[in-house]
Image 1 (cartoon, rainbow, N blue to C red):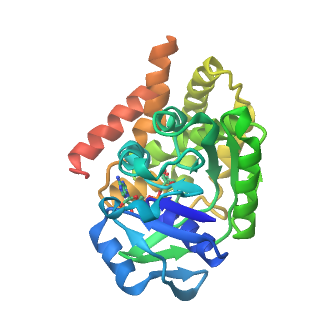
Image 2 (spheres, rainbow, N blue to C red; image 1 turned 180 degrees about the vertical axis):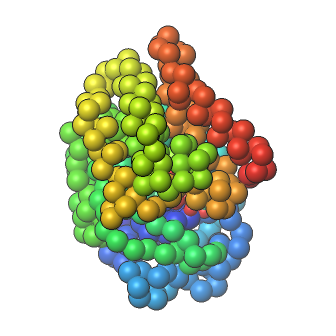
Length: 313
Ligand code: NAD
């Protein structure tokens, strides 16, 4: 299958590498100069579960795309949420009438953005529990296991969605077809919406935040705002189950010692965050539906203030 990975950072490298190793014709696209040049020179290098590997996967800047890159079967989007629109704009010529576009970004509202560039029947939305990091330009750090849950957003896309699930399975990416992907997207957004902004602002890992007396009340307030807004979009969240799911992450013997990705983006790497697509999206949607979302709105403003204080880019 001819596959383009649109955004070959941490997650794009993982998916690109595993799909390439499974025999697909994979092309990476990215704009980060040092990263692109390193991969052009040395292939995509990775510490892959402790083993050092390098795979010669073609990589291009969007401006280098030509007619030979057209007729793509699948595009996997892996930018940060705020980069999705500019990426879609720059790869527009690659999106043909039969090109499936799979979006596994964290956050809410990506289906609306995708519909401006891709026919609805070709859009696949999902979530992934895989993780990935970068050791530096051209080199990924890929440990552990994960899975992908996806679904077509238009009923006519089911056959194609199931075909892509098979492609992911063959690559060891553990794809499954979801019967209700919007629920999963909102549920994952609740996890990110309760832990990312809070741990970033508090400069705390998940266990440290979870051990405070205010953690559970804060979780409950944020989850109830997500649930009230989701309901307006016909997604009925099980708030108690989601609360328990987040509380389980506090365990220091599980993932509790980890800092959420937003903390790594802003505090460690001085990068702008995806807050506008998590709590910010809930605050925006809340305004639209006349649903109060004071916690999400305040958290979003505080994270933006922190981005400005740290001069994040
Ligand atoms: P990343 O920053 O490592 O990768 C994004 C890449 O996209 C970068 O290399 C960047 O240069 C490139 N890019 C951005 N805009 C571009 C454009 N217009 N044209 C070309 N290239 C462009 O991010 P990531 O960690 O891989 O995360 C991607 C998404 O996956 C995010 O939504 C994140 O929340 C989600 N996610 C990440 C993980 C993880 O473990 N890293 C796990 C689950 C979900």
